[in-house]
Length: 215
Image (cartoon, rainbow, N blue to C red; front, side):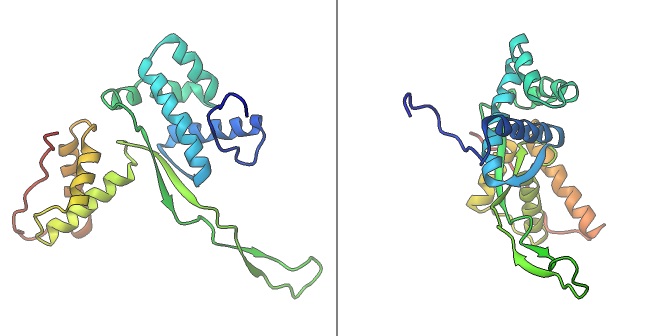
């Protein structure tokens, strides 16, 4: 193709249907903070979602008009995009969304034998098992990496482990670096996990709290 335009996934749809699909996905994403879909759809919706957050950070009349053209529920999402989300990502240079691979939502489908057979027994046949993924806004209330990191640290502290391995330390830095009061919010999440899981506990060995990265 002449011109060497940017490549993208067609998603098995014509242009108008593809755009409608992506608009619907990003509308659900900004409304719910997290959605589950196929891997290919998540990667394409991620590109559009990042562009929308960039428009929100610009906070100009032109960017508002552009965002208004994309969302299916603009009157409820536009104030969120140009308000809380703009403030959340004010210091973050990029990477506003995250795609996480998950198991296919449906591994099997059930088909019945042709109608008219009173003795019909459902027959299990394999689903196409398209790769599924979770698309989420980072540093939000449904940030899965933040929740998993808090749970990991809670387990380690219950077992008296003070030293953080390289992967856990990296995840701590990622989930707190651009989050407002990141370390404090993480510590609160860890304490809530301990209380909700086992209730009041006896005195445990004091474990060193997470320290902010100097970088």
